[in-house]
Amino acid sequence: MFPSYQRSDLGQQGKVALFYLFCSLTGVWGSQVLVPQRVNAVLGKNVTLECRVEVASNLTLTQSSWERRLPSGSVTVAVYNPLYGISIPPEFLNRLYFRSPSSHDATIVLGNVGYADVGIYTCKVATFPLGNTQASTTVNVLVEPKVYVSAGSSALIDGGNDTVVATCIAERARPPAEVSWESNLFGQSEVQLFDEANGTTSTQVSYLWQPTRHIQGHALTCVVRHPALQRDFRIPYQLNVQFAPDISVVGYDGDWYVGRKNVQMACKANANPPANHFRWIRLDSEMQEGVEIMNSTLLFLRPLQRNDSGVYRCEVANDINLRSRDVRILIQDQSQAERSNSVVVAGAVMGAVLALFLIAVFLIVILTARRAPPPAFTDKVIDLPPTHKPPPPYSERAPAIPLGVHASQVAWLCQTRRADCSHEATDRQKPTTSRPGPPAAQSPTQRPSRLQWVCHQSGTDRVYINHREHYV
Image (cartoon, helix red, strand yellow):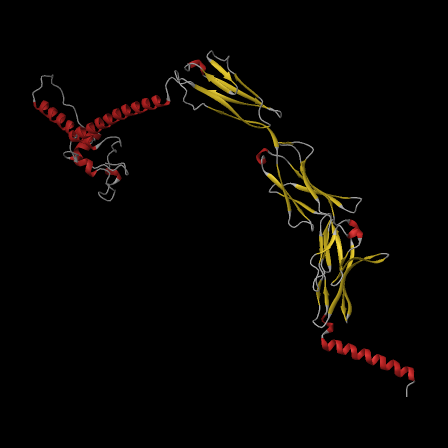
């Protein structure tokens, strides 16, 4: 058996266990307090501390309150009682209020948040017969950065070295802001962080780039990201690249001729800063009379003359440098249209002459062909292959006729020779009156001459010539 005081303790513990069991069966444990685990407040702005209360139907809300935890202990900052109303301490009276107090909502709004408001806040709910239920949230104060962009300390000069184009600054942020540059240039970014005395941090990002005139007017964009900002903060910055004048001369079209009127040349310059000096000069001689300079324009107040041909120079200057452009002017005797007409007429005349010449040549060729004699038999059989007529033995061959002698020429020589032979035979038949004497002896072995042999072999006018074998 147990002692009496032990029985008394066991009886008390049993009653407590039975009470807990009863509460769980009847739904008293359904009461809850819901708050966010962490809340970020922006310095100088309002912050909302949510507290949602879920109370079962068998419970009664007697009071809801907010407490702040300090090193010295917890202090109450707001109280709501359904019967007695709202109570707020004087130090929070002007910047703290319940948003919509009820048995289900104990949310408060704290205005003009400062660094001193950082800490842990607890939402407490008292119900009958359960008692107190609570939940805590941590308030962190964010400092929204002040963002601005400043130009570099040095001007951007075309063709210069790497220069700081601009610097993007996110000043006094908590936590430090994320800063970057968006650009399609091939530059570099340099990041610097500076800690401030109040616990904030300043971030500076400089953009370095080698300036060139072709990027004049383009823009960079500074992008800042921070938890205190609802979206990214973007600031565009337009580049300002300074460069010497880029000159072009307009007005001279290459068709200036003697007598042309109302002509002029203008000097155009693209420069940053704008050009502040224009000058026209002539390089090969003095400027002729009747030519006037008006700002950047060279005016010819009279009809053009031959001596207006020459080299003219336009000089333009700005704060960066002086540039010039030379133009060579050629004054023609006629306009381009007149010269084109002359060329057309000359071409037509030359074409007609050439056509007549071709017609004459064609007629001459036709007439010459009609008067030409018919081809001789030797022209048909000349240059036959060696197999057509086998050559005679070498001992029977006569001396070859030179290659340059044509077959028709051989036939003509043979006919002439036969005529001569006939005359000689006639003369021998006539009586001679010369003194008597012994007749001239003729050698029986005397060989005929080349012409006689050819004529003898040809018979009439037939001669076989082979130039490849060089024999007849």
